[in-house]
Amino acid sequence: MWESVAASVAGMMGVVAAAAPAPPPAPAVEATPTLTSTPFGALPGQGVTHTVTISGRGTLTAARVTFTTTADLDGVIARAEPGRCAASTRIVVCDLGDLLLGATAAVPRVTITGRIRPGVPPGTLVRNRVSITPVGPTATGPHVASNAYLLPGSTTTATGTGPAVESSAVASEVRPPEGSLRAPVVAVVVVSTVAAGVLLMRRRLRRRHGLPAGRL
Image (cartoon, rainbow, N blue to C red; front, top):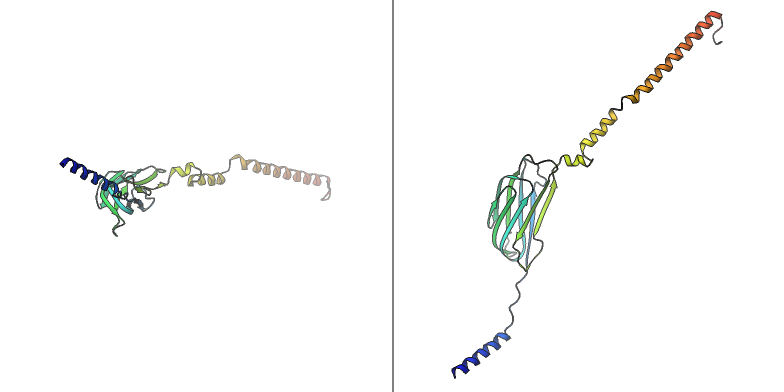
């Protein structure tokens, strides 16, 4: 008897479970980082501040922000709001925990300050990049932001557009080849000497023969 009752109850529970609506899918998460470098184009020995903000909506679970750069930074200080960071000369990793994006006025932020190490060669490509992980299967939007610039120096002269090329062109105009002016000067001297000799000879002949001027 009890077995038949249990079977009936189990059957009824199965029917109720099958009739219950399926849970709605998890909402998509939008997470987009923004990277601002101030000043942009910082030179070796100059201080720079990189600021990362995250905008979007939804809950980002176990958010991690990773910042990388191709130029060594001295005296790196990194701070996350919320979260904590570990920093080295070229990599900063910040764990922000679970983020509820778009629900409050406060925007998650990471601030990185340092000084570009002196001695970075001219023409070096300085590339700053930031990424967000993990994003999960329902996350949307670009999860990487970056900026880049070239340190001024020898690379511009190699392309033929730098100051060194212009200086060479000016120098070539100011200093012509040595033989280009000598030949005309020598020719003028020779012609003048011959003409003076002819005139002197004609004067002597006039005096000798007693001829008036204009003859001979």
